[in-house]
Image (cartoon, rainbow, N blue to C red; front, side, top):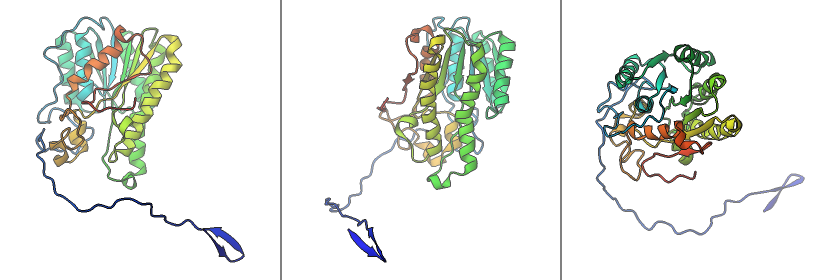
Length: 318
């Protein structure tokens, strides 16, 4: 409707109540919720694996390697623990030497290195903050100096901070989350690209949250959405060079990021009630590693710009 405002007429928007049926009552429904893990919380971020109870499962005891990555060199960021550790173990079993970039979780990193060497492959540890482009260049420089080449880049590290409202996300948190989860992936790729060749592979870890959203992880989910588009755009950019770029979007996985991000109460039912999935459980890191093996090997030679979804049965839009 229109009303007179001094000498002018202005349009007034009325709140129209469209016809809907109202609730006729309420019911209380109780349900049993599986408790998956002991209550625990870590103050340090992104978390330590060696103090988790139970420890994440990094290796599949029934895994049969077949030399898919024989003679190759892989650089894995966040390879000290969680999904990164499982990738390192699987790559080593398939014949690759490993360079692991990590922040400061030295005990976890040394444990991963020892296991890779026990498998029979070489492993280089490079601590440092990948928010800085100079550190990303250093990781690649040391890897090339040590191994003489690189064939696979796995951008895997990430941070996440639970906030119940966008109003609680500070400029500082937003900056740290994007610099860690997005900028560093750009920096690592730029540093690695001069050493990659036809047949090389870049694999980015994104998340189910990129496809479904997550109200308590708005900034984290946004970075993972950015990485999905980064993967697709970079794949188109590098296809003529014969360098494949793909991503993996895990669902809820039991890694150090979980007790360092969520409350002790949320951790108890992680994957069953808090962040539930159709399979009614959180995944283990070893269940994600085969996706990275596939994307790094010649088995995926006709794939680029794609995303694999080991997520416990969630149906995503892409």
